[in-house]
Length: 477
Image (cartoon, rainbow, N blue to C red; front, top):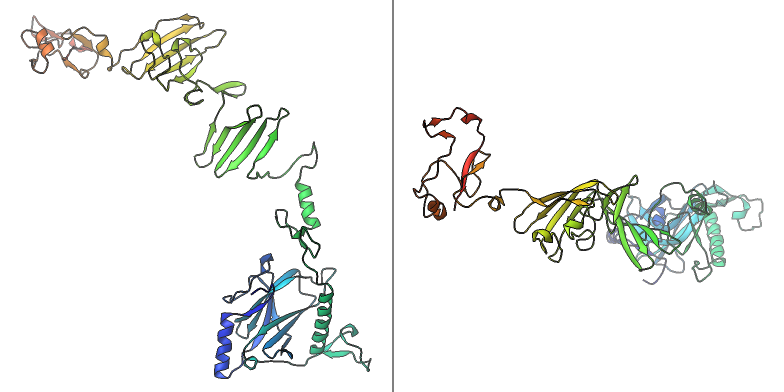
């Protein structure tokens, strides 16, 4: 259907008409309803059982067959001046059991009420085509109503001051039809003149409606109008963010995307943009990015060299540990880092922690260097006044104890109740020569020395054995 405004029978209406025709009955159409379509011109749908947004329903005033078209029924309703304050975009007919029989759309028409300056009575007309008009009850009662002369055509008897409802309705319809023909202008667009519908929304993107003074006032009251004005209320960022320009053409933009909020810095010299600070609401974390230092109350709290600051290759790499005296955490990410060449740890994955009060003017720091290869091993040293650098000292751990002990078979004191992995207690036990050939070679009798705090001359516990807190062990090879 190419018509813009039209009326159709609903599926329920078709079924009821067919039933009335087959049984020789009449369908009673008793009410007409109008709606605003939620602010839009509707498209009639035969499956509808109600209007999109009904604003008024009342008894019909006129129901008759068109003289020029016997298959067309015309239905009219008068909306008094007391009702209104809404747009009419849709109309519908209901039977005496509240079934929606026919539905149509309607040219956008504003119906004012008596509280508005331009209040008026309005007649709504609806035309529907049916196969059998006899199946519809045509109820035309003549009702006497009082009316002023503006509703009555001139007559010979000028003293008559009453008119039937039919006459009033016919006269109003004729006047409105004539008026509509005289003002039948198209809707206005951005390229052509015409009627314009008003709209008080301040967030609308329509180009076919005009802003009311109320909408203009809302925008004016909430806008920053000139330099020095104070903005109040909530600031809402668009998808392009809030941009702050600098005089050197650099800029900082506050942006939101999904569940993230970002501070993005634009460098005009390099024509690049980098995120500096992000907030992830899903993880509830703040993330500093592409920054060399972060200060709180003029005190540096995060800087290049601290754990997690900077990228793996360019942010805080571990160069020669001898030269790094600023407090922080450093790490190598590739074999192309010097590390600690003094101790033959060149081009190895490693980390460095620097603690203390190091600065370029004085103070001292403690350095802790841990290479992950050949170990791990732990080296440390102190640096006083950032000039007096002590030698690196390696700490003894279970992983490197073999680097600090005599050959296989030499007893060693051990301050725990059990020997470490790879060692045996000196308890006089037999030596498995096949399992420990080096240890068996060191002891010709194939027995471990018995050094369990015994008095060898008296063959019993020494009086001070309870005060001895170590045991003797040998390397098991």
